[in-house]
Length: 340
Image (spheres, rainbow, N blue to C red):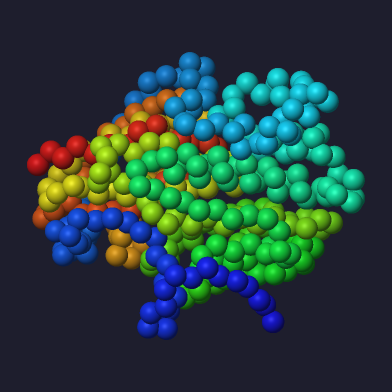
């Protein structure tokens, strides 16, 4: 028997509901599905503003990685092996292994108080908080995260919960189940991650299991999407590499303030490497419905792109999913200008 705990806010018609919230003006809700079907997207070419040599890290973010590493840990490493800290030039762009090394030096595994898997868990928590807290500085936005050992004490968040299963079993099987109240379960591959798209939920889960140690799992849930309804710009949206090739997606709400047939969006962003960025526009009435998808070629450095959104009636609100292919990607600004 698998046991798990949930923090649930509502129960309706036999289904547990705690939806990802996306604000929409009332006048744009009436014909949303019809408008989504008629929506068109015209992407412009990406213009490189500064190369990676000129702009090596996304300094526009409010919080850097060091903010989420305890000062006591940094102090120990400065005393014991200060070259580890001094070798990190860009605290807005620190690789996972370097963060893990900091915890390994500060608290070496001794088989009693500190186990090997704890260093990895600490590094995962730092990466999660770095991405989430920068996102949560945007407009009325909130992404929540939970991580740790899914076996004991377990990892759950709202509707989501990893199954309680010992680490070597997950390693041998190659995946762990993620339970989602009110929806079908998902399988999360070992040393990988999966974007969770349900009709009313947007999430992400990742796990790293090895045979000899307890495994680490993380769950993210977008509770309220960053949007441009009450502020002209969205800022500080981060996708980052966590371990191996695991890169989290991000979601923002593209919402006109009034009924218009066209608007222009401007996207300014940082990419750590040359890579493709997949973009999907999803129906906020049902996130599994992809209205339009495309990709952009991003050069390493700071770039800018504009695009035009149109519809035969009114431009509909949409949830935008952004997924980098290789490495860190951060949105400096996203703004919408209504043009007619």
